[in-house]
Image (cartoon, rainbow, N blue to C red; front, side, top):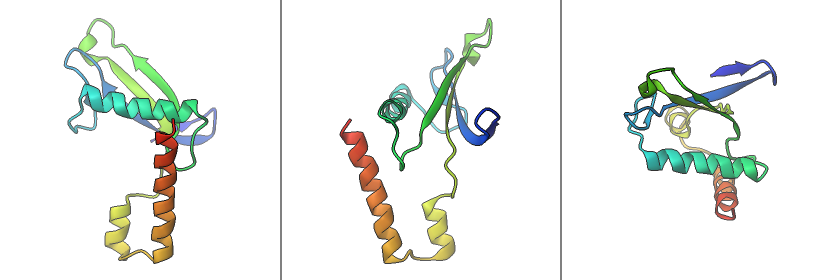
Length: 119
């Protein structure tokens, strides 16, 4: 989480190592070329089509070249910060959701999926 002084808002930055060892997410999960391309393409589609209220927005992409050692090259993907935590954690901590809340979440998911599939 970082603070953008220009916009006065917090943003999220995902750092992806792109050096000779291939693509790896710096937060450690297995990460390959296809998953990176799929995720990045989805973010670009959302940004190019004016965004969607239920999808994270792409703010910027910054390529960081670390001099003579290309193994350490990175791409920094800057997105809107999504807060509120994980749905699963909320379910475990608070028990079952009310039916109206589940209906709202289902509508939000369906709306976001429809947006992506229409592009």
